[in-house]
Amino acid sequence: MRKSTVKVTKTTVFCGVFLTAAAVLAQPPDLPAFDAASIKPSKEGPGHTGWHSDPGIVTWQNQTLRGLAAIAWTLQDNQVEGGPKWMDSDRYLIQARTAGPSDDPEMRLMLRALLKERFQLAFHMETKVVPGFALVTAKSGLKIQPAQNPTGSRSTSNHGKLEAQGMSMEKLATWLARTLGSPVSDATGVAGVYDLKLEWDPASVRPAATQEVQNADAPTAPSMFTALQDQLGLKLEARKVELQILVIDRAEKPSDN
Image (cartoon, rainbow, N blue to C red):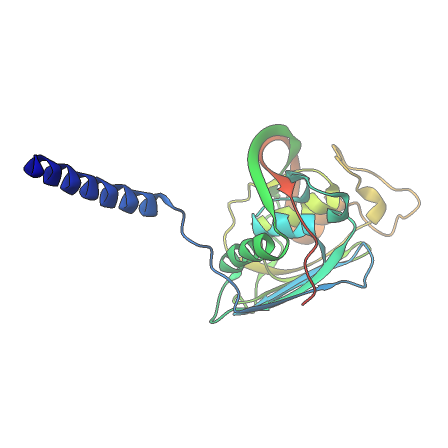
């Protein structure tokens, strides 16, 4: 009887160790985190946002929580749904640094960890197919130059002007989606990052735009669609776009620093 008991005990212990090891392997790895991060309410109003990064340092200026979630998961604002109303009204200045040099993709992962910790962000993912645009290269070819400093990125937009250094086509598509209020996917096939300037008539864009909008009252400024082709050598084509939707189940305002 004792011999049987010993065998059962050994088997139980072995199975317990095996299951524990399997459970550990099944757990997703922890997200990398910023070495230090400051979150403060922004005093600026809507219409001006910024994202400035250098190796190991990043600043997100005048961003809503919805915008920050879109940045963290490489989505567009209309791909983030749900959540409390203040996600679209309250704006924040986030300044963070890493323990060592980090590029934008790594900082996006760190931003995810920051939002989960400081905003108590909880979510789930869904998929939708909706009308949108594809960003493609115009027949004239690209009219922008590779970035002079490919290790950092800066972008500022306000009142019909965009100035960016170190901007990828994916990041430009995300910015266009936020400006147009319609999904935009990067279909250029263009790698690398670029310095660029874009000026357009702000009245030529509207939410869910489906075609070029002409503005007779401001003939000196081209429409967004014309400006993209003439100034950057890029074009927007209407297409069906498959979107990953980040649905916010819970979010809380961050505590004071």
